[in-house]
Image 1 (cartoon, rainbow, N blue to C red):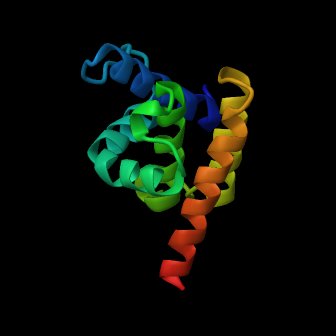
Image 2 (tube, rainbow, N blue to C red):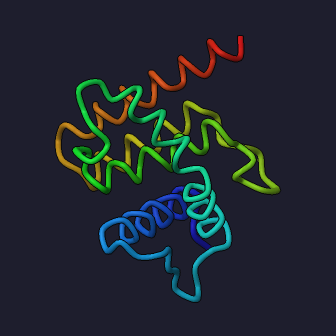
Length: 133
């Protein structure tokens, strides 16, 4: 059975491929339910997620951010802002979502991506926490 980290990464890849090919989300038959739900939830909330990315990616337009990095940001932000995206399980803590996003960027993106992703997500989390407090 795939770990949650692997399932999150599968959601990132599904979103990335969908963006890159300008096609609807597509999943192999054996895709975990969590992966599908997470990717579909990102699509359902993409406008709000992209607004957060735009607001916290100083000096970068959304289209200038590489598609894989956008997908990583969207998945992490969904889990930070909508923890119910993990039905039946305890939500991942916001810091955990950020850590997983940064680790995914370290493994699959360019050298500057982890710092950029961490900065955008940390700024968004600070905003959300100050709004809630």
